[in-house]
Amino acid sequence: MPVQKLVTWLCGMVFAGLPPMVGEAAAPTVDLAVSEIIPSATEPPKVLVIIRNLGSQPLKRAVEVELWLDDQLLGRQHLDETLKPREPVYVEFARPVPMPPGLHNFTAKVDPDHAIRELSETNNERDLTVWGHDAP
Image 1 (cartoon, one colour):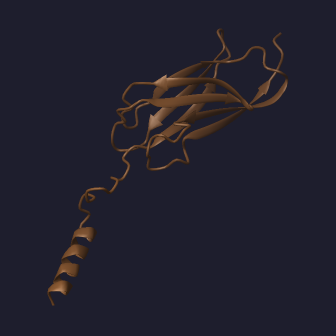
Image 2 (cartoon, rainbow, N blue to C red; image 1 turned 90 degrees about the horizontal axis):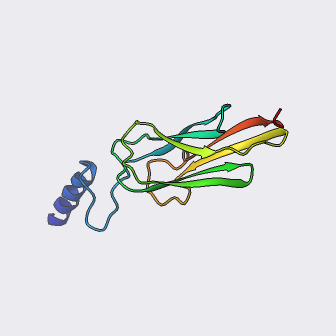
Image 3 (cartoon, rainbow, N blue to C red; image 1 turned 30 degrees about the horizontal axis):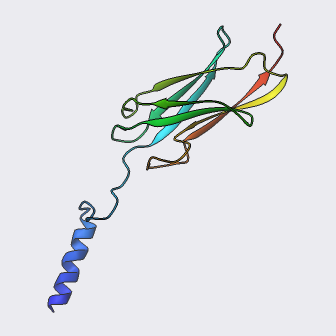
């Protein structure tokens, strides 16, 4: 009978949602996302990437952000600021000029190396298709 009581007690602890035991990883509380990619039409030509932390807690460690054009890396930036929940962080990259004629794909990636444990990894990347043309 004492074993049955112990099992019942342990099950109660598990279902009560108590913090993880020593050696277990805590559930992630941050969720990094690329919310927008905005190419500028003005001089100097830039691409603005907007990053958000959709999680419930601030991220207090550095994170990397990359911008790609088709299969070419345009730049990688190291953000060293705290990413507060829901607040946007603006990251600027230089845009190539002129862009060759035709369709091109910008891809922005936050935490491209998956160094940060998150609620979701599926929103760390966003694409934007644009039409390139020669400068007038």
